[in-house]
Length: 277
Ligand code: HEC
Image 1 (tube, rainbow, N blue to C red):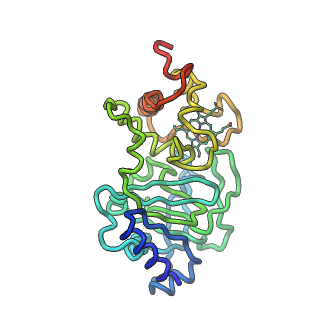
Image 2 (image 1 turned 135 degrees about the horizontal axis):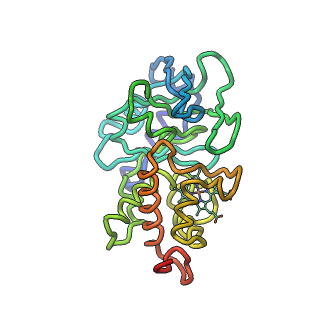
Image 3 (image 1 turned 180 degrees about the vertical axis):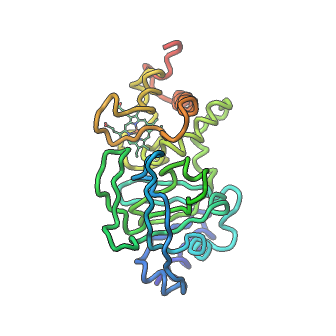
């Protein structure tokens, strides 16, 4: 069954050059199909941990690297490829394929101790969120790099995986993009386009186009909103821009993102692009 899906997808990519997509079957099927053995992977759980209070969890998981290699074929870690993980709730995580070469990732499908496969997402003020069917986790024990990035790149409720060219979203860049706008674009991919979309590119967790929504905000306010949305709207489901970064790093990132959003085409009267405001 899976083979047929992959075969059909590969034919599609061969004939049209489109991305290869795969709806994920249940874990037992994956194990059987690829003669893989589920293993226990211990991680610092980034959704429930805080920098001062790291909480370890042991998950049951399958190695992502091997699965992705079998689905997408030999060359999947090519320079400009990105793996997109689609979640049931509209969240979408675009992960450069090169990241899988640097760190070990797994598709988790349960907890070793048999407790509910769920987490509290402290930053988004949500409790007992189901993680299944699949949760992408990273072997972050002993990796300062990964620990600092927190929950970025840890999509849950994953139902579908797609290999795409990382160049696709570059269509959001104006042709005369300044270095600041370019950096803002990259930061937006990491911090904003997981939930928000611009002209249909990005996540589907929030309906309204991000570039249009941003127009209601003056640059200074927009930056403050990114850094601490709960200050404006207590209990909001929008998380603050990565709190594991230093104050100056967050400030710089928010500035670049605001510059990128201001460079998007929008209608007149956009508060974001009003010079000097
Ligand atoms: C985990 C999902 C998520 C991420 C990541 C996220 N947002 Fe949001 N965002 C939301 C949600 C949900 C709302 C609606 C919030 C509300 O009304 O309480 C929202 C609302 C907004 C709004 C509209 C506010 C208004 O009502 O005028 C803007 C602008 C915005 N986000 C910008 C950003 C930017 C810029 C980033 C990246 C730094 C970002 N968001 C990252 C989920 C997210």
